[in-house]
Image (cartoon, rainbow, N blue to C red; front, side, top):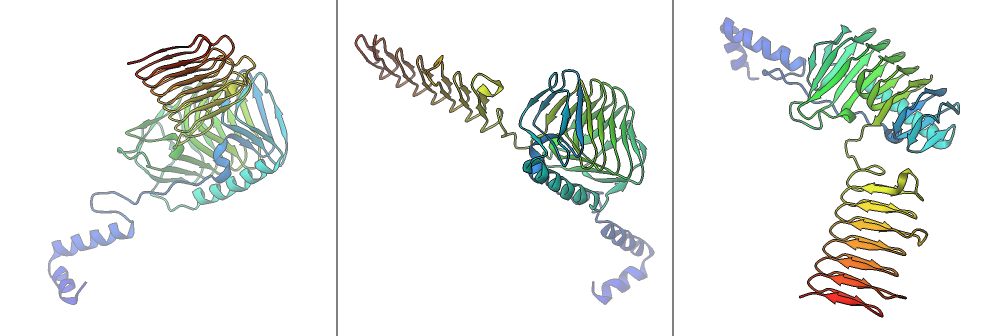
Length: 359
C-alpha cells in the first residue's frame, strides 16, 4: 500500500479499524465474508481400495458385510469370515497390504499436519460444520447427530484431527447435506476409535492404534488402523468412492466370476464374465463359456455369446445354437437346428429354418 493510503487510514479512526480488521482476516486466511480456503482431499494411495485395514488382526462376530478390500499387515490374522462376508480382495500379510499400510501412514501424517480452520472439543452433537480442518487437542465424542454441510460443492473436504480417542454413542449419526460425500470426510485419530451400537458413521477413520465397531454400527467410508486391530460385530461397511468406478458398480464396473458374487457388472459400461456372466448398462456385455451358456447383454449395444446367447439393444446380436437378435438392426444366426430369429428394421435370420422380419 502506498504511504499516502496508509496516512489516510491513520487519519480516520473508522478507517483504521477497518484496515486492522482486514489485516487480521488476511492473517487467518479468511475473506471479509468469513470464507476460508478449501482444503484438498487426503490421498490414500493404494489404501483407497480397502474398506478395512489393520496392523495386527481383524476380528469379526456375526454376519458383517464388507464391500471393499480387507487387509492386515504386518500380521496376517483374520477371524470371523465366515460368517462375515467380504465383497472384495483379502490381503493377509502380503506385499499389497504392506504397501497399503505405507500409504496409510503417509495419509495419516498428511491429515495430521493440515493447518486448522477451527478448534473443536468435547461432544460434536448438534453442530454443523462447513468444509475445513477441525482440530481437537484430546478426545472427541458424538452422542447424537453432527452435520457436515458441503454448501453444494461435491469436492468439499472435511478433516477432523483428534489428539486422542474418537468415541461415538449408540444410535449416533454423521449426517451429510448439500452434496457432501463420504469419501471426502477424514477422521485422523491419535489413538483408537470406537463406533457405538447401531450408530451410522460416515467417513474415513485413520487411526494410529485400533478401531472397534460395536454391534450394528454401519460405516460409509473406511476403517484403517495403522498399528493395532479392527474389531467388528454385525456391521455393514461400504468403502466410500468419489468416482464410484470400482469393481461391480459404477461407470466402468467389472464383475468377474463363475457364478460367484462377481457375476454382475453394473454401470454405463458394465462387464460380466463367467459361466453365467451378466452385464447391464449402456454397453453391457455378457459372455458365457458354453457351460450353462446363458450370457445376457442388455443396453445400447448389448452382446450375448454362448450356447443360448441373447443380445438386446439398438444393435443387438445373438450368436449360438438358438441365437436371437432383437433391435433396430437385429441379427440372428442359428446353427444346428437353425432357429435364428432377427427382428428389427433390417432383421436377418440365417439358418436351416432362419426367419428374418424387417421393413
